[in-house]
Length: 154
Image 1 (tube, rainbow, N blue to C red):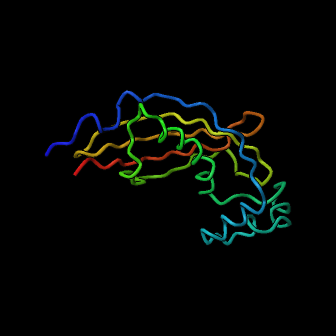
Image 2 (cartoon, rainbow, N blue to C red):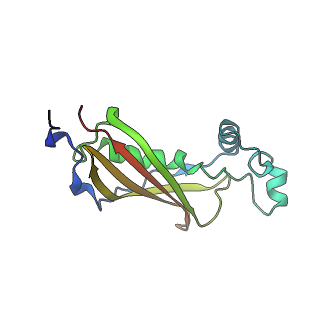
Image 3 (cartoon, rainbow, N blue to C red):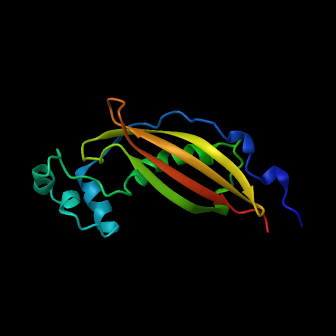
């Protein structure tokens, strides 16, 4: 049976930008917890003295930490009824990061998500979204790029 076109991801969301998220204050213990969870062993992520000796104000987050901040911007996309994304059919396809500088405990970060691509492939939809993450001064820190695969109906 062919997929219902009304249930497919709306291609018109390509180019849509959502409002900036509420600020996320990066805490030292959140960085350490995340580092332990992903088995990151760098003392720069675990020991404030080591991070300070390396020139940072506090511990630095592991490279994949931006997913924590990006989660809030992706929630806007997933909750958008016009997008027609059925979360129960979503599989995370790809994740990339483009850094201007490391995330440091004490940073106050906001994310602004833009849908950069919506493609259909083999009855599935592939949605690529970029979350530009900036600090309290508005300076770019990192862009988190996610591709979500929304499985078509069986």
